[in-house]
Amino acid sequence: MRVYKFRIYPTEAQIGILNSTLNLCRELYNAMLQQRIYACRLGKKVNYNSQQNEIPELKNAFPEYRSIHSQVLQDVAGRLDKSYANFFRRVKEKKTRKNMKAGFPRFKSRDRYSSITYTQSGFRILDDGHVWISKIGEVRMFMHRSVTGEIKTLSVKHDSIGDWFITITSGHEAGGEHEQPHSYSPEFMKPIGIDLGLKALITVSDGTQIEPPRFLGKSEKKLKKAQRNLSRKQKGSGKRRKAKTRVAKIHRKIERQRDDFSHKLSRNLVEHHDLIVFEDLNIKNMVKNHHLAKSIVDASWNRIVQYTMYKAESAGTFTVLIDPKYTSQECSQCGNIKHDLKLSDRTYHCNECGLSIDRDVNAAINIERKGMEKLKEIINVGRGTPEFTPVEIGALPAMVTPVTETGSPLR
Image 1 (cartoon, rainbow, N blue to C red):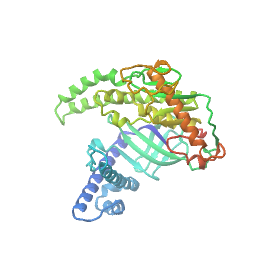
Image 2: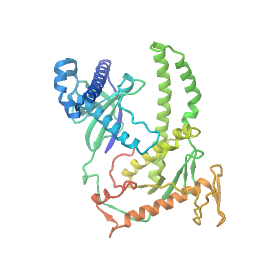
Image 3: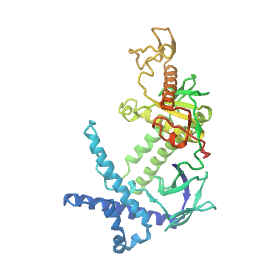
Image 4: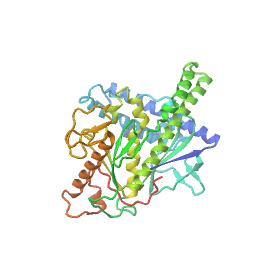
C-alpha cells in the first residue's frame, strides 16, 4: 500500500460545496452517534449495516443529502463504527493497564471533522493536472509525483489554515510486476546501527552524529507570543479567529520542518546502507517524563524510523527493530554489562577490558550487532536456501522489513 498527498486548489464555488458537504457529514455523524446511544439505552442493537441501510431513507427525508455521493455517506457510518470498535478495544486493554481511559466516541465539532472519503469510486485522476471528484467537479491539483498501483480510496481534507489536500491510497497485487524474487544473504556490505537520542539526534555505529534541529525550540518564543495574544481575545470574535489562525500557521511550519528533515535524513540513510537497525523504543511511555517530553516530541524519533522503513521497502534495504535492553550498558568490545551506568555518564568506561568510548557510539555498535544477529537468525531458521519467493518473504516476522525492487519513487 502507498499513500500520496497532493495540494489542490478548488475554486470559491467548489470550496462552498466542500464546506457544505463537510458540515452535512458532521451532522450525520453526530446523529448516528446519538442514535446508537439511544438504542443502547433501550436495549436495541444498531450497527454499521443498519445505519448504512437507512441512508436512502435519509436522502428522501432530507433532500440536501442528495448532493453528496453515496459512498461518502457510507464512510461516515464506517468512521463511527471504527470509533466504537476502538472504544471496545480500549475497554479490554483497560483491564490490564493502569491509568488508561477507554474514551467513548465524542460528538464532532466543526474543528474536529475536516475530511470526506470516496472509498471505491466517484473520482478520477486526469492527465491535465486536475482531479475529477463526484458532486464537486474538476479541481486543479499540484501532482508532484506519479501515482503507481491501483487507486483504492481518495480523501479530501482541509487543514487548520484552510488549505485543501487530497490523499490517495493505492495498492499493488501480491506477485505483481512490483514484486520480484529477492536473494537474501546474511552478509551485508554497509550495515549500521542507530542510537536515537536528545543530545545527538542520531548516533551511527561508525561514529557519525547528527545534532537535533530543535524546530520547536527555535519557534517557541514566537509561538508563546501568539498563544498569549490568542488567550486575550474574546471567544467568538473575528479577532480571535485571526489569532487562532496565526497560532495554527506556526504549528504547521514546525510540522513541515520536521517532516522535511525526516524525509531527507531517512532518504540519506536508505541510499547509503543495506541494513539499518533501530531500537524498538516505547515512545508513548517515554513522553510521560515531563522533563523530557517536549524534547522527545520535537526530536520526532518515531517519524524518522517510520520514514526509513517505508523508503527501505522501495530501495532493497533491510530495516530491523531490536530490543533496547542493555544497549547502552553493555560493552561493545567484551560484552560486559555495566549496571551502575548513569544517564549523566556520557563516556562509557569498561571495567573489564578498559574500553573508553562515547556512550552513544557504544550503544549504536551494540544495536548494529544485535540487529545483524537477529536478521541472520530469522533468515536461516528453517530455511534450506537463502533464495525466497515473494510469498515466503511475506511470512517473515513483522520486526523485519524484507524488501524487493518496486521502482516506485522514494520521494
